[in-house]
Length: 204
Image 1 (tube, rainbow, N blue to C red):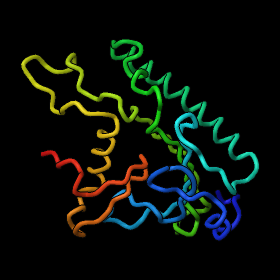
Image 2: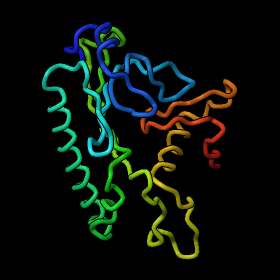
Image 3: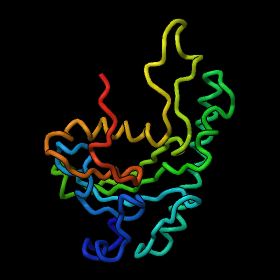
């Protein structure tokens, strides 16, 4: 992302990320993993499954789209192979996990840039690529009865891929939801706009 010219050019030329899309460019310190802490000191660029989402490469250097989408294809194959291997290792049906990732509509690939200025002990800018691999929004998520000890009940009720992810994000972000009164929370990782009042209740 450093190669994508100046901050001013990036802010004006690149398609900006939004809660509705979760694709495109997010400037430095836009996002907070925990709302009780300072913003994350990074800038990032998100890409999602091109079969389900419209990625925005406006303003990026020539070749960025081709490289990013090829990386997506490689990561998608790797995710499906990992799901197969995991199922076989657990003695489950071969498609036990892959059948919940038909659309891959919650998955995302994120290109991160941590500028040198925000890390006093760093010798150079840092870069990373994060791959978020989740079950489809509508995929059922529940405890397999084969893994519940005899005489016991599952600790978690059945849910969906989307609600499961929202619950995980609420645990990370929702611990401070009451501190600032009512406020709107944007869950960038899934592109869903949530009202704190609609968050799942905290589990004991």
